[in-house]
Image (cartoon, rainbow, N blue to C red; front, top):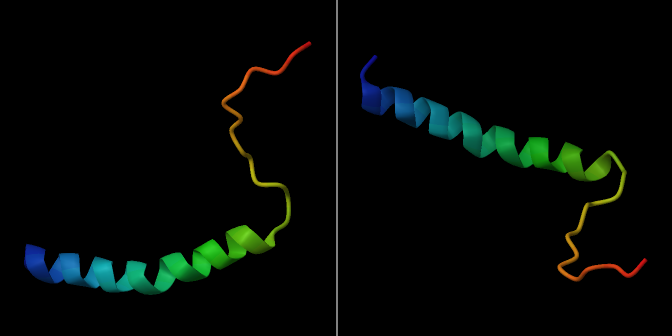
Length: 42
């Protein structure tokens, strides 16, 4: 298998896998972490 063919195979896999994986990450609950750029007072 040449390098171009290998890249295409991996790219095709990622195009299908990543969207499905991201769906499971969003549906598992929990809170998203957000960064607050301001210092919090004590």
